[in-house]
Amino acid sequence: MNLKQTIYIALAVVTLVIGIHQSMVNGILHSYWILMLSVIFVMLFRLERRDT
Image: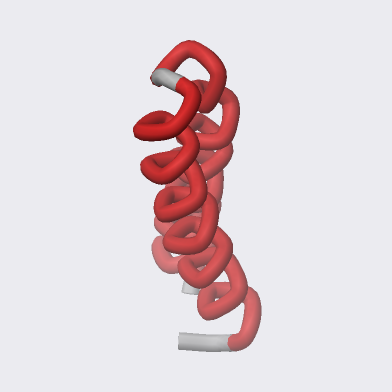
């Protein structure tokens, strides 16, 4: 795992935790974009992993 993959997976985990917290506090509709950002980081991680 190289640095780019590590950054992608770390950002995915951080945004997922923040999204779960915000969905418990504010509701899912207000935190949907944060959760989707986490999904984007997971997709980028998988894409980068496939290319190496």
